[in-house]
Amino acid sequence: MLKYRACSLVLVLAVLGGCGGASVSVPALFPVPLVDRIPLQMGLHLDESLTGYVHAEDLEDSGEWEIDLGSAQGQMFRSLLSGMFDSIYLVPDPAAPGGEVSGVLVPAISEVQFSTPLQTRSDYFEVWVRYRFQLYGRDGELLGEWPLTAYGKAHEDNYGIQSRKPALQAAAVAACRDAMAFFTVQFRTVPEVRQWLLTEAGGPTR
Image (cartoon, rainbow, N blue to C red; front, side, top):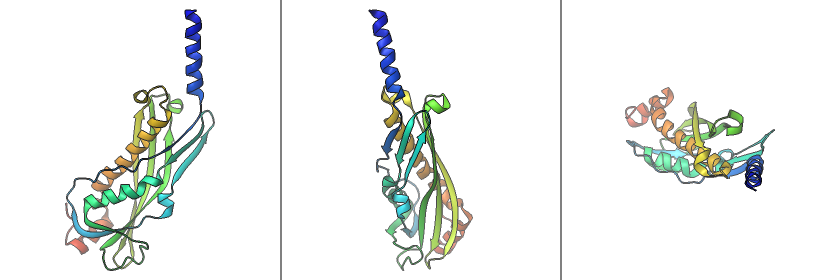
């Protein structure tokens, strides 16, 4: 009887573990970063290719996977820029920003990759998001663009027996938070950004 129960438990775990794929979305809950603000009014252009971005992939041994990143990007970048600048404005067209802003940031997602514990023979779900940023001047001229790669991971054992969805979601959230942190550090070091800050704010700021 004891042997039968043990075998049944193994069978149940195998069935649960073999159910392929997951579909997750990133919750739009990101804090405003606490950094020295740049004394400028900043424009933000959110293209539909960003706000509607969904990564879908069919893995041979574990089914169909989907990560909805786009639905959280608007709140993520509004929070990010609200902490970095005196004020922000949503701009419909970065090439015609209007007179209220000193420049316009245009974020985009160029690539997403993820891995599962089954693939890497580890205990982690991992997510990589590659962003591309463009900076437009107050006259609508493209001043520069640069990439940023963000990474997040989540340990599957922290989310119980049905860990697939919450762990993948947690890894995606961690990648978005990593992008925010990396952006706040990297932004002022981009050569085109430094020149823009020198023109608009009288210096690169801290």
